[in-house]
Length: 264
Figure (tube, rainbow, N blue to C red):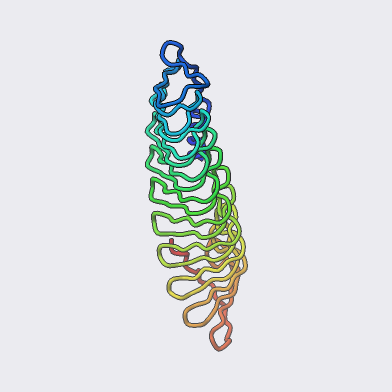
């Protein structure tokens, strides 16, 4: 995913920066302590606390590519609370560990998306909220930069999914609420309604049966608002072949008309 790659690039660009000290300006020794300005041969400039010759405490470093980090340091590495702004305009505010993003924080992408939550070794990992630039929102668990485990996905068009994810896709049992008021409760696979499930229509009708690639397909029972029910085989959201309708008194008769689709 894009957010995974961008943050990975950030970790490489910050964690891998090495500075050799310029002998012509300041060359801290093991005994150097105080508020100092240090200029490095690669063009980076550090302004902040030096303790025993190392960056410790609060300090700001500006790299040659205009990347800026301002925050806490421990033994020459970004550790604790800090802020970083990258050349491409993206920025991060939160916790660092051993020179990389690690802990709780907020990452703001140049395309307008943003993430608030947990990071491990520079990638989304743990619980968080991701706001997409198109108005979608995800609240839930991440593992190594991907949606994994329990979560809720809110679509900009009013739909909402509550369930489980694996490798960024909906899997297992979950609930999908549609903007028109219909609701699906059942099994998901490969990011779609697949397997056994129930659709509760906004008008009070209900379908219980099998689904394939988001469509009613296979054996199922359709319950109408008048109390009658249709039993048959479905394909592509419609009756496929013969079906039987049973009224509230138990009377049976053939039924061959299609059933309406789920309102999106």
